[in-house]
Image (cartoon, rainbow, N blue to C red; front, side):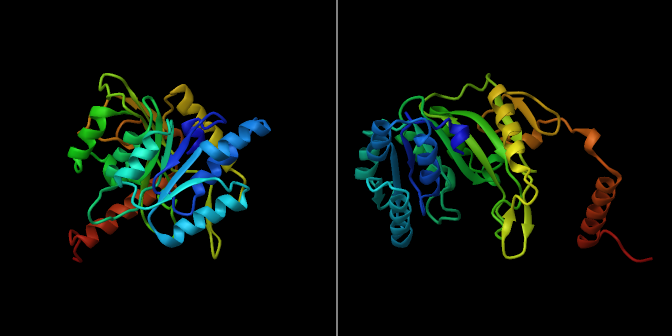
Length: 284
């Protein structure tokens, strides 16, 4: 997330649903790199902003920042849509927003958190957000997507591993947006297919980088994005509007060199299971 956003010592970073502060902690670490003592002190005072509604998570976020020697974090307790908090953040010239909004809220959709984050950012600021894949399909939430594109540019979307939040089953994508710059549907958006991150599931440990693959995979993904390279099975570029699909799966070419007999058999098995489940196969 931080690397996609280009976080550095001169950034001003906000997470308006900061939870325990993990994005802010990571951003702070990136910002401290190549910074001198005066710059580090300025980062602590003016570089990081968070908002958290939940009492327990707010306390945990403060504790996490203090443990990492940042006792001056600007973390607000309250609703990120609160006008006073919003006005305060808008006055800070924040140029990077990182957010993984709460899912399945009854009154606010995930993309509305994204919309609000981008509104807070300075002109040309970068928002990197995690949202459920359902928001990228194109069949629902068209009103929010249209509002989003009227004011902001969709620079890139990355399809993430299906089990990235294991043991929960939420499928997500990561979107990169430029704030306060209307989307031009004649300009191509970059799409990344980031399903294989090298992590494997281990009992009691969750998903871990057991074989040390992540570093090289991450470098490849970032290189593809920065160069906007198109590679079969990994990336694509396409012009999209608010009613189009925002996922790489819709536009990338298949890399047939990686297909095996097992892939073919697995597809047949899945299709047969579907037919049986739907009652399309009967015993003779």
